[in-house]
Amino acid sequence: MISNFKTFIYDFVLSEAVKNKVERVILIISILSFLAHLITIFLVNNGLVTFPESVNFFDSPIAAIYTPFSFILIYEVYLLIFYLPRSITTYIGKQYEIITLIVIRRIFKDLANLELNSDWFDIKSDLNFTYDIITALLLFFMIYIFSLERQKMHNSNKINPLAPAQIEQFISIKRFMATVLVPIFIGIGLVTFTTWVLDGSPANLSVAIKDVNSIFFDQFFAILIIVDVFLLLFSFFYTDQFHKVIRNSGFIISTILIRLSFSVDGLLNNCLIISSIAFGILILWIHNRFEKNINMI
Figure 1 (spheres, rainbow, N blue to C red):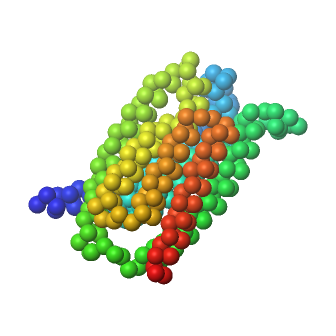
Figure 2 (cartoon, rainbow, N blue to C red):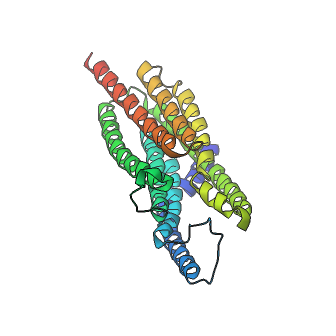
């Protein structure tokens, strides 16, 4: 009875059919939010609506792209939870995709603040754009490398040493964790968004806009660190192989580095993001070499 109830709840929030519905809803919201932002920019440019001079979020149509990207990120969060029971490495890969999309979203905000003149490297906004554009390219390439290593790992694990009952039990644990994560992240999202809106009074609007990059996602990755630790601990019930323990431990460190990136700005932020994914790739690469060596013995 309990097992059937857990399956029902899981299918209610994380089934393939629900994923498709969420995708359509997010797409519609993204389009509507983009249009709403464009209309606001039109009203501002025609003097029908005014904001403090320090707020340039509604000055350029390029900045409007930032808004639908925010909802696309929400869908990526859902996909991360969706893939958690299926594969730990796919789940980690989704973390990397999310932080990459956050950087891409930030680029659209940077574009609206560009000052095209000969003092490029003396202007903070122009430097931030340079850092972000280079970081986005590096992250995209590193995610490609990570996906190749992930595929190699899956190919080498065609013969799973675990019994089918053990595999199903571990999947059930991950399904339970994924099901619990859905209301947790919805709650965090509602609380952080409400707090951000209430703090975004006209006097503090410029500060609120600046902090929008980290809204929700700093708490989001803090929760993911806890999830990663639980995955590591539960994995001990099924394997004590050193290279798998180190791989899962390394993924925790990678998530922590991403979380730390939200506490800093500028070049250090970019360096932490790049190092987090680079560390994850290196951990998975060494794991695959280790696995290949074991299979040859």
